[in-house]
Length: 123
Image (cartoon, rainbow, N blue to C red; front, top):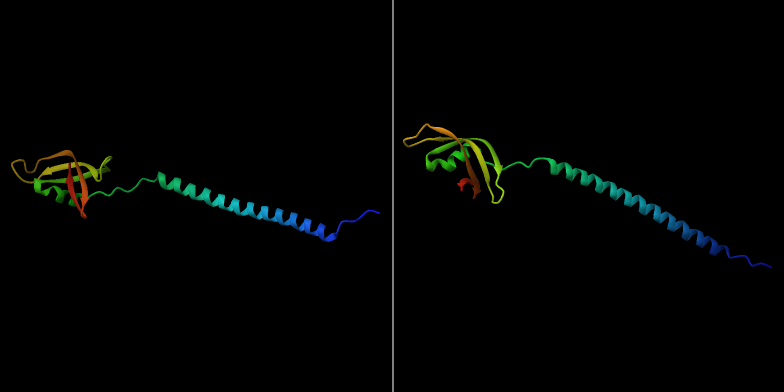
C-alpha cells in the first residue's frame, strides 16, 4: 500500500511557492516603478543642464558706478562669466566723463565682481 503525502505539507509547499512568486512579482513592480521615476528624474536633469545658467552681471548703472572714480561710464552689451576667478567680463561702449577726453567713447572690455554686495571693477 502506497503512503499518501500529508495534505498539510502539500498545502504548505503550494503556499510557499505562491508566496515566493507573489513576492517576486510585487518586487518587480516596485522596482520598475523606481526605475521609471529615476528615468524621469534623469531626463529632467538633462533638460536643466542644457538650459543656460543666468549670469549675475551688473547693469549699466552699477557698472558705471564701479568705474566712476576713473572718470568713465559704460553701456554694457554683453557679460560672460570669468573662467578662472569669480566675476564677469563685460563688453560695451566705454565713455570718458571727465578730463580732456570727456565725451569720447570707444568699445572696450572690463571685468567686474560683486564684493560685499556692490559691483567693483577688477583686473
